Image (tube, rainbow, N blue to C red; front, side, top):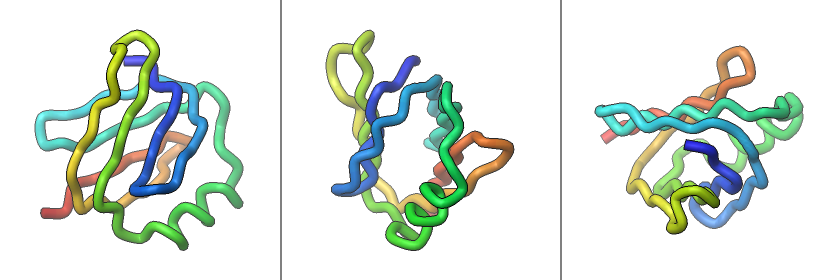
Length: 85
């Protein structure tokens, strides 16, 4: 799926990229343009534990929401949100 907007609780990130949701509800976002290190550090500092993730896509027509809690990390520019419940 191609995601155009990512909402972490109430924080909106205008991220354009590919997104997939695994069976265990892990969300993987591969941005087309890499986020800067400062941007990702700010996200981690503000949102150590994310309660709700909302993915918006033009091709889906409606947003997809996932209830957490989620933790986040970045590996080689890819954002990974892992469900911790």
